[in-house]
Image (cartoon, rainbow, N blue to C red):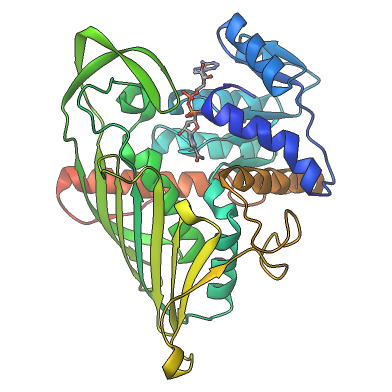
Length: 379
Ligand SMILES: NC(=O)c1ccc[n+]([C@@H]2O[C@H](COP(=O)([O-])OP(=O)(O)OC[C@H]3O[C@@H](n4cnc5c(N)ncnc54)[C@H](O)[C@@H]3O)[C@@H](O)[C@H]2O)c1
């Protein structure tokens, strides 16, 4: 694994626990972790149970005792590491957004396909049981033809104008702001649940145009420099409307300026026979409405998606003994292990990462042109 902070912790925890809950055909071994700072990476290796560490990802990739490279670094080095890993014949599991640009994500997809390695991108929200259940309901036609998807991904951690320019606000490192960080997840859920998006029309806003440079940072936190201020080049909010190939209409809002919303990844889908609502902050619940319910009982009902009959029912705890954020990673890593054993890349693959990148790119293009733009994967 390359990187060892926020996602490093989430992925390490999942490698540790997925084999405990699942009967995996292939079991992950936490062989080596990589970071640039020897002291920091050694401490991370000890704490998170990795057998060894490296300070250069190139050395890691060339080690013969490694089969899978997991990339949990900031977005600007996903492409370089993933391509080198694929060329060295290693399977690759990469964080989202897959890349900084669509050109990079296309090269990454080409590299994993050409070198015939297993590839997955960490769109972990797909693996909340409620999302898998929503997928089942939609696939079975329970809500019929889909008319709308209304997706919001709302956070508020940078509303303080004195919050520093951490890597997520540096265009050269992150590619974009709320757009690639948050909208990427909504886009993946939209592709997973509703279908492909054809065309988009978008707007991106940067509310705070200058921020203090960063003195020290990790994950979503950072300390500001008292003296140096720099321009903010990424969006604080990205909003777009979308037209799906199947005729559905989508609205998407991703922002880090929605006060009071810490990590509100939510959506509503409306179909001819019913509706579905979900919010990651109450991730065990799926709200459903079915138009063919008895008229006296019509309305949204909240299903606690933890029964034996639900996706992942029986893997964790008895009914209503709820699970959390980390289990989305366990579930995804269980798929990854299954894929490695079967020799197939299970979704979400680098293609899904690239397709999401194509939609992100089209929205950025539209925000600049102030017109509708076609989504093009250029493949
Ligand atoms: N799926 C999700 O829900 C989710 C949530 C958070 C972050 N992410 C994604 O995960 C990735 C990492 O985000 P994070 O929040 O963990 O960031 P972070 O700042 O907490 O950690 C980044 C890590 O990468 C290391 N790093 C940076 N450059 C490196 C290099 N050249 N070689 C080796 N190590 C290097 C840093 O030292 C640090 O350990 C990003 O792509 C982000 O978009 C996904």
